[in-house]
Image 1 (cartoon, rainbow, N blue to C red):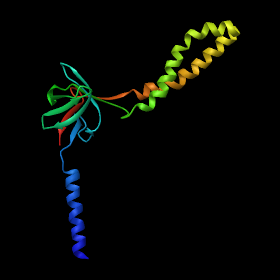
Image 2 (image 1 turned 90 degrees about the vertical axis):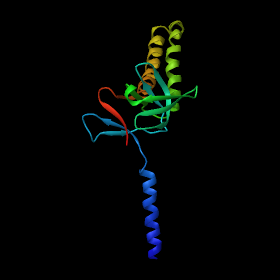
Image 3 (image 1 turned 45 degrees about the vertical axis):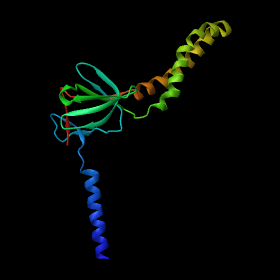
Image 4 (image 1 turned 135 degrees about the vertical axis):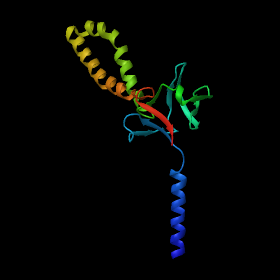
Length: 166
């Protein structure tokens, strides 16, 4: 029984070393040392440099001083030095397909505006008021959700954050 416990303990120790012993890509706050954000390699990031911006980029690899990113949809690979990156952005939500029905509702509110004269001809001023109330309800349902769903978290590397490989 004791050799089995030792073997289990050794396995757990090695598993923890493999799991947590790797280097991580970390955003460190400049004034609050304990405040850190670990950059996930499976997220899609936006990198802005003085020369250009790289949208929908995945991090392929990194060293102590540079990143290797893949740009979608062209699948090009670019190497960025930490000192050249001005900002890093990531979407608040990883998958934004859930916003699609609300986008269709918002499109419906915009496309329904030309139907106001039809409502005026059919039912007069009360028809216009009812139509505007209907469009207001659609607006209140769709646009706040689209606003929140399209937010991005932005890390400014020149003022507040520092990119490091730990």
